[in-house]
Length: 514
Image (cartoon, rainbow, N blue to C red; front, side):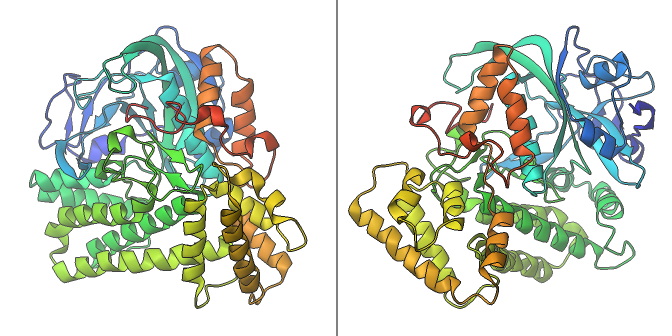
């Protein structure tokens, strides 16, 4: 592995606390603090993403030191590991300084094409930002993030990536449901990558502290490194930066709606300026379609981060970023226009996406009503979101619709409800006839837009249980399936959630510690 190519320009550019003191504390006027990894004594590598490693320029595992590096056991002498400081709004409330409590940066690497990727461990030890926690991670949360981030990538959704996953060799105490029943769990450490892990919260922190010069420096850094389409010498560069972040965020949320992904904890500190899906915690794909579904027990009963609220919350989070950047942009009307445009842009892109899901070549007048009717139908009849579109793809008027759709419901279906489905199918067939493309091309649109496989929480639950028992068969099958989400590689995965997992902790709802 090319460990000698890992650079740490962040430490060279921004104010840093070089003390190495891991004591949890406020760190005003700095953007990062050097901190040691845990140097686990008996870690064990579970998965290594060799293809990703080659892509980012890190290469293959060639010696024990490479494995030890991934396992947070070994560190080259010249490498200074660090954690970054950021702030944020959590559940709508200002939380002040937060920071990388479980993440520690190695630095960044450049591949042969000149593309940069940051590398960080998650679960490799405490940092000054751990907020009275131990900086460790448990197996269940680490498996969930590794597999889901890779699943999202193969679905074509912007995301952080997973490089490796290991047993840490330790046991960690966690209270999974915050109900006072703490227990020992197997510890784990993973490495993950992204072009940048910069969040809305990094900018919020500097704004709140009145560090305008450092805020300007950070924004210039982001533009020069990650928004090269923006002219760094333009007097409008900061407004263009904010506009581009807004557009990338809209694109990401549209993709979440396309596949039925619910993030579960869209705090501003969990929002990437690059429009990447980041910080996988109590997430879930939809099983039955429900705009009010939240997978996060901490989000109950308010359901701030429910599936149907995600665009609205993204816009709210962008308001907070706009507030943080105001000292640079100094144009309230310009910021308001960008924020208002977010809503318009999102719904245009949303309807274009929905048209493709239904196999329409373009959005026509009245399609918004059809989309709303379909969503209401799915919600009222408790229809599986993924399976509905999969079965719609193969439906024709020549088949018995009751038999064709019988396996997509989560409750007993009455004749009256079947009639509602029949009415919708008639309406849908009528709309298909207005397409200006062939049925073959229509089907291709559907196949490219609608996954046959999504990584459901019950499958993750089963995989985690098997790994705790030392088994990897399901893990390996899931890795193959998630790399081919638009095919039925394993038909047994392309079914609705089994009844025995209804209400099972870890299958439908999870806590933030998940």
